[in-house]
Length: 174
Image (tube, rainbow, N blue to C red):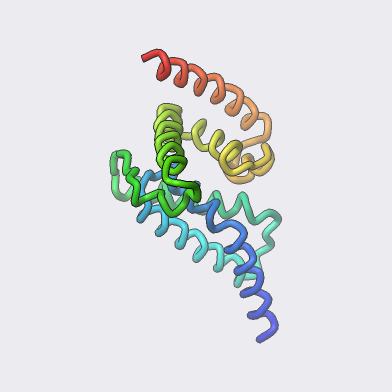
């Protein structure tokens, strides 16, 4: 029994160290709120821990973690019915960007623009693009995380990139 507990703990810590920052960034893109993103990240790993201690077969932990995080974001907004508003300030992001002051400022402004432009896309399209290009998911990992088929993900990705180009074009021509 003690050996199993140690194995669970080691397995959990390995996944926690490997995916914590990715899950936090995912939640941050979805919520635009640092405190809420930290809560969602913590809750994601707490729920993931229950999978581990139940000895549930986990074929691929990465999509499972993202699915848990996504469901928590959805649950939060269903309960709160909040309107997403930008919550980006220097205090929110400075410790995540490791450059000199000028680079930090440019990175923060670019990140704000990208996230604001992404939020002009439909939610599922935004999620798929974020998983693919921010979190470096494969098509099949995105399919696993969203519950959609690979072909459907490819179509959403293709259309989403086209929509993002149009949004970017409109933004640059203002």
